Image (cartoon, rainbow, N blue to C red; front, side, top):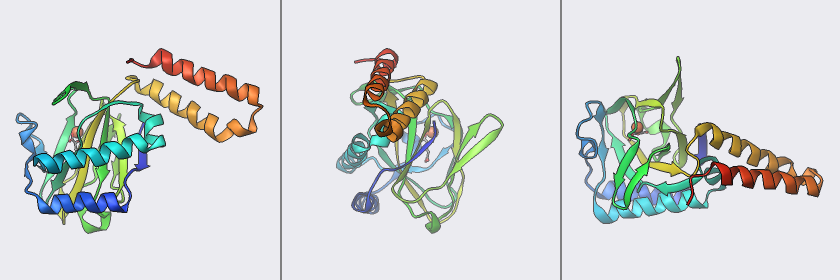
Length: 220
Ligand SMILES: O=C(O)CCC(=O)C(=O)O
Ligand SMILES: [Fe+2]
């Protein structure tokens, strides 16, 4: 499932931009030393990184659309990343198991939160390969694109301005993307149509949803 989710409001966007402006970024290869395609910058300053992670995590957990499309079980601390002119991230797949301070997580869903106004830079779109086609995302500030970590994807070179994003990876309670999609669809239909249904039938539909989630989730 590919979902565009309005995730951050103006004050959060402003705070993350201020954090980015006030700190030194380092070569993004620090977290992927063997990558030959990664050509961007990351922010690793302790408190600034912690605050970034807190803002993004709180927004994810408070967002119904995010919760019902991703079913987050573990959220990697979000990291600010900047692509200046000439920077890009070539075609790659995300690592399946990521070592985080609190242990390993399996990346099921990848998430880019756009923080720069799209008009302020050229290039820098996220392109996700889907079979013979490609999906391209260059979204307004505050919007998150969530996409399966199983995909090959890349960030086009920036040719003007700078592209600031917050990046995170999420382990889902439901590892199978198709099952996640079906749960999301069923939840949407129940939410949109439920009030028009006979209450007894709506209750049965809710039971099916809950029982599917019980059957398909990894735990705890
Ligand atoms: O900058 C982006 O939008 C994506 C970055 C990415 O693919 C990654 O960090 O693995
Ligand atoms: Fe990636």
